[in-house]
Image (tube, rainbow over all chains, first blue to last red; front, side):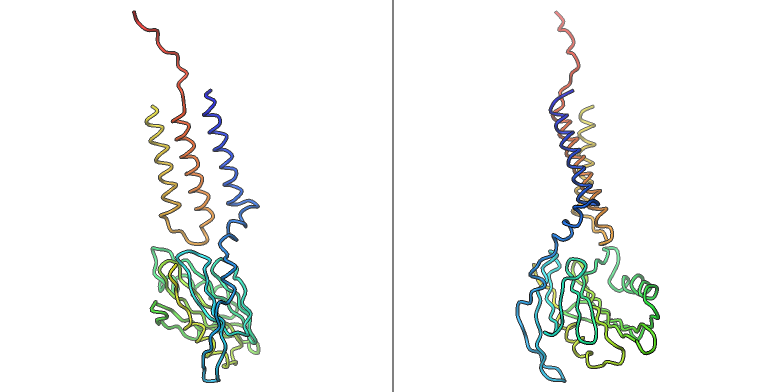
Amino acid sequence: MNKLVIIVFVLMATALVWLGLISFGPLAKSRTLAHLNPSSVRPETTTNVSTPRGGVEYNVFHNRDLKENYYRIQFPRDWTVQSGKAAGGYALTFPGGSGTADLIDVPDNSTLELFVLSQELPRLKKELLSYRQMSYEKTTLDGHEAHRLAYQTGTAGQLQQTIRTYIGGADHGEVITLTAAANDTTLTPLFASVENSFHWEAP
Amino acid sequence: MRQIAIFISLAVLGVGLYLKYFNDVPDSQETINFFVSGFLIIVGVGTLLMNLVWKSTKAKPPEQK
């Protein structure tokens, strides 16, 4: 048999083994972690926003994890901000609650509204304990279509209220989820200011 | 025969490139898309190269005088 053909075949087999390892094997994690950009969790600037309860210091984050999905968002300075589970996401903890900000992939053959109504709402109802929808509204944020969903979970005494906002984008969408005790209204203006600070950035 | 093999290799490579760069899949299916597209690209390039470097070992017919 031709020597060159054997060499090409061996190289091809080696490449296939490497592909299997990087897809499903021990190297798979390194492929997904490569998307995380450390600068995404370092605030670049600080801004002061006045709210009905006085001025609040905000840290401004520029997320540059996924190309075509760069965005800017700001969180109050006393909130703890860490990388989310997936690239392009944040995990938030703050006095009285917690939250996340994540990129979501809306399939090309769907719209954000259809995605929220046909996939997200049924999923939340199925997965969350004592789910009770409080409100749902279609709105606009940063010039993009947005859907704001408010719901309560948990039992009496430990009732939690969550505001979940889906924002459309050119490639991915963004979903901001902020949860606090249902009777805590002090965080509502902060939640609104976080949502309103969202802005898609050019790569 | 070789032309057919090269055509099939190019077709496999083309499908692989399409899946990798032009097919939008949900996040949950990204790993399988990465594997399938990578598999098709590697097999496409590999078989194409094998076709191009293959030398026939068939004995040449004796020249007629």
